[in-house]
Image (cartoon, rainbow, N blue to C red):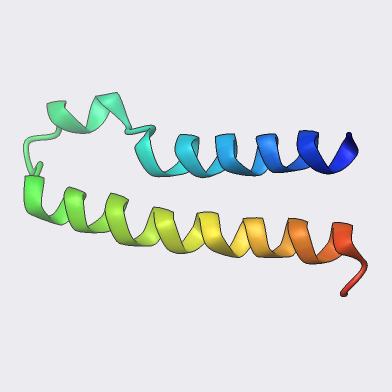
Length: 63
């Protein structure tokens, strides 16, 4: 049961980190859609994978 709850939070964390955008960015006069898309798409995915890896390996006792 704990493993299922942990996976739920990891997957929800992935989705939140990847898809939760900063709504105030669109009011920035230097807003660049391409730069924001690359930044949010790549860096958020890498950050989500790193956090998920740390959580899963620590919980599994591998670290």
